[in-house]
Length: 146
Image (cartoon, rainbow, N blue to C red; front, side, top):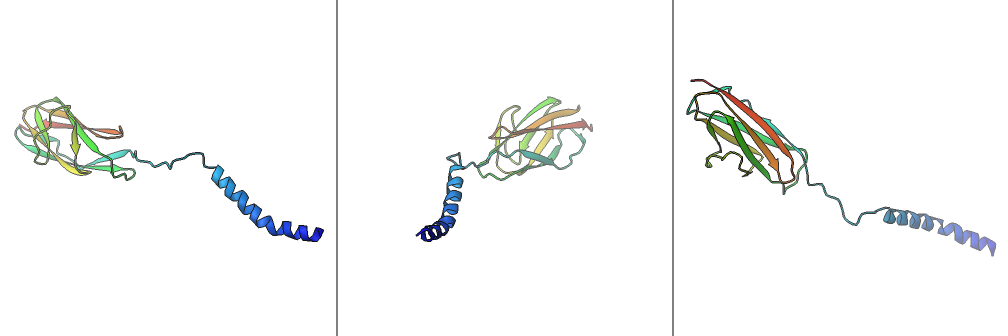
């Protein structure tokens, strides 16, 4: 009879081990929800731009937003402020941006066009931000070629 119980106990050993592993994996999860990362910081890549511009001329600024991850619901925005000289900044054929107003960006790769309205040097900053609070600043400075 003792040998029967020993054989029965040894036969249940794999089932006890499996049950212990199962219970520890179920109880080790302390969160009820799956954590999904959707906030990815980004970098900006800018193609070189001329250092000089004449009054009435336009300079193309090519920009690319490079996020560290991919989340399809990320929205990007742009705003700018000109602190030296006068000019206009616009996205493709859209109306010129107003300083310090926030505008949505339609793509991660885009072109801005700066048109000089001044015969002195011009400086402005561009801020690109996303809907998670990440923000990057670019500074541009053009000398007058007049």
